[in-house]
Length: 113
Image (cartoon, rainbow, N blue to C red; front, side):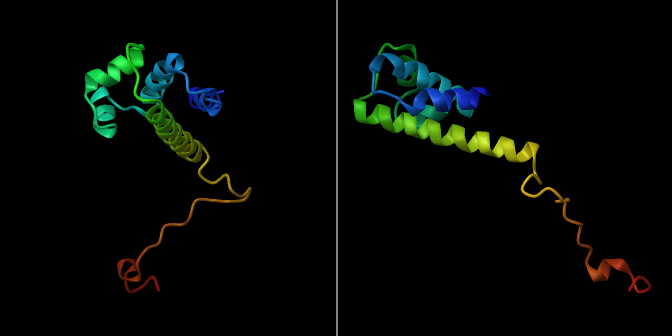
């Protein structure tokens, strides 16, 4: 199980508990590659506030905690799906091959038609 899947499983049954929010917020931010500053901009707060949430010193209101977890789950899922499609780009059908490059007729020259 990848760290993405582990995070998604752990947060799937997220019970709004102030004690566990900080760990999920920190892990979600790290998995998405966001800096403290980027998270602060996204959640319209200060970077120090994000740090205090992640360290368990404070927490946003309950409704905001749920929305933040949903935000990170959505981002982590998109990253996981994108990385899976990069490792198997033609996995949709067994006999798929990469598409042939298209060469414009003008580039082929007069004798190759």
